[in-house]
Image 1: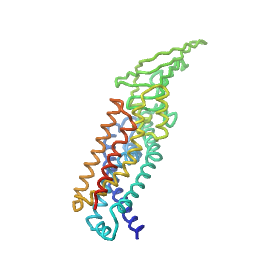
Image 2: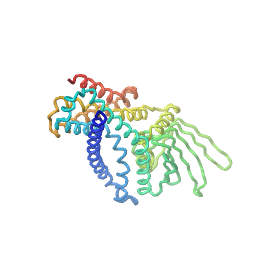
Image 3: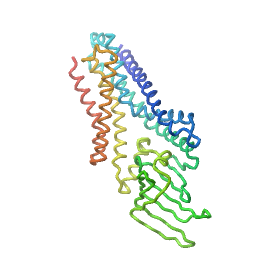
Image 4: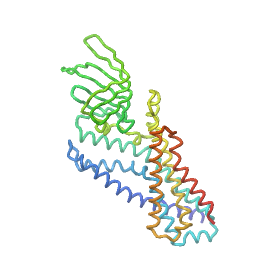
Length: 356
């Protein structure tokens, strides 16, 4: 009987989370498709390409919204069990709150595994494929040289970047200057490149080799500013932002930044907040459990959804606030990334301990 009860509770919660997740994805996909309207018609980018772009980005939205989806879905599922007196019957049959919470936690573990699969195996390649397809459609002169590289030509200069490390910041930029006869005139490399939105790029530190016949001149400078028609948005279509990389690749980005004495706080926060977000899905489900035994036991479906939205929005607002604090004040990314899930865990366990 115990295994039957566990399977029933787990199945009910997963179905509730799946239903809420489907609704959230439809809304998220709709908003993302609306954002693509300005790009449709540029180059060969069509409505069909925009739909493909949206579909390939859905796995990314799945794990990003997993905590709030899990919370609302669990509230709905457990709320329906409470309203149907099924939880009351189980309590009467001798199931303690902690025993029922164990079944709820089992569903949380399954959601964590699902989130990990989306984060590491599905979302990164899907997003990369979406960005590459969009780049090929919008900008036919873009040549992608690898899974995380972007190539583009501006006049007699060819640019390539290894990866995107921020909204307007790239790592490992190289410049190849060609002569009138397409002969190579110079090769330049910068560890990091930042765009200011006006066509100006700041390259730091910069090293260049210029070819003049049989002579090679080496030039080094802490900073070089260049002007190009190619902006950060252009290269960003084909290069990956930290939030769209797998954890293994993100760790390599962090190592790259640290080895070159660059600020890796944002990338580190992205990595730790991703892990913490997956763990938060577990505690989101657990947090829903004490509510259905408390003041929301006989509440309506709208009340459960409202409660889930309020708690979910509070989670995201706190996460965004902490991310800004890490960027501005230089606080520990590891510590601040784990504050939201730890708070959820403390609240959930405290409320369950008070149940009778």
